Image (cartoon, rainbow, N blue to C red; front, side, top):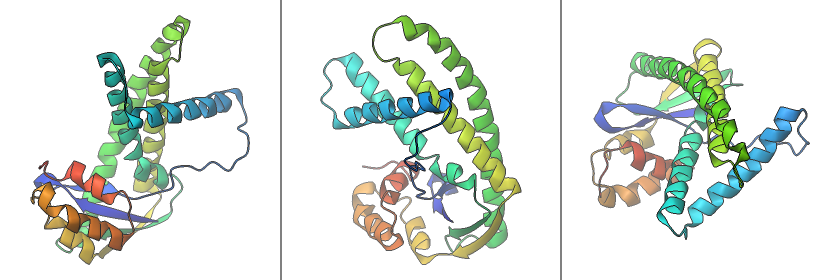
Amino acid sequence: MIIYLVPARSGRYELYSEAPESEDTGAPPEGRFRRWLHRANEQWGTLVAQARQGGATGWLARLRDRVIGTLAESIAEQRTLWALRSATAVMVLTPSALTVPDARILLMTDLAHARRQHLRGLIVDSVIFVASGLLALVPGPNLIAYCFAFRCVGHLQSWRGARQGMDGVRWTFRADAALTELQALVDVPRSTRAHRVRAIAERLNLRDLAAFFDRVAVPSV
């Protein structure tokens, strides 16, 4: 597995990878909870697809689509931690400005923060998810329950990944020229840097890196 330390605003770095989005083997899920989660996943996927298509009428529908889109992005950005759940050896690519000791400290600090943050999030969202069951009496899909069910699953998987990263992974580090080039673009306006960021993403074969970099670099027009 490869993880990238992507340069971000204010001298920070963000963990990034493009792990597979689905581990579905095609086998029917076993157990009542797994079957419910599988159905909820399919319904959530439908809601996300509809939200991304746009065309919602009315402020409430537009607000709903915006919330769903934000949650979908949040879930996608947790994929790196999810992938760490079963990892035992990981290569970390860094900008050349980072020494190996500094990169290791940054990595461990981020993982420790993620472990605490996702544990707290799991506890809070689990309480809200249970409370949202009261809305099951309202006709139509229980959007709040779906949202918080996936937030709970996301927090759990991320917590497990952060714990594995701290305790069960052998890390190696290597400087990468593309990330060094990307670091020089953090403070460049988005309209100016866009073609160079896309070119770097293509060199690294990371289809979503440009969009991720735009979110973590300085917000520019």
